[in-house]
Image (tube, rainbow, N blue to C red; front, side):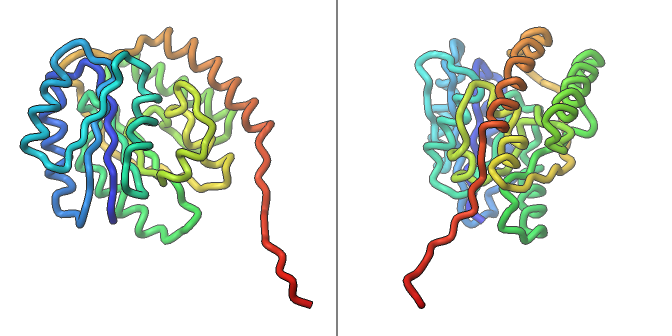
Length: 242
């Protein structure tokens, strides 16, 4: 299975080298893979570290946003540039474990379903503060109650999905938090797979709880609007036979 690993990063100078090495260790036995790191307007030495790593890892590609556009746009840029049909995404802070990517790939192969378009990581044991665990659980419960996406943890950055189906979705900022609902809206299946979650070793979170809450309310309303306006056609071509 050929796979493109897309990682959005913003001011993660102390994390990128370790993360690149871990992805390589997890996937080097694959027939073919690539890593695409998208530097989203970093103001530290993140881009320099990525350029240096390109000398060691020929499967590493680096894209740069000249100014920060946010995590969703960085993921979108990476997916557009990807050359393989299946995309794995990871957060750039190192809290997702790259060794879980093969686990998602195995789960995909065992399902044997053409309609399975996404596997979403489920951080069943969070290594975060009590407040962050509570706020995440609360937000996930509200989202599930409204959108009925049957996905316990859409905030997990570790996902595996089909490139073509992702690019067919209507893009908006923060789309990465609503991918399961949108994939299901478009007619695809989504399953959740338990993955590990690590404490952040360096740097700090780019999001505040209140920022996420405010944006989340607006985004949920937007997703509700999209679902109400979306129609799924069943198309067949008619031949001229009598």
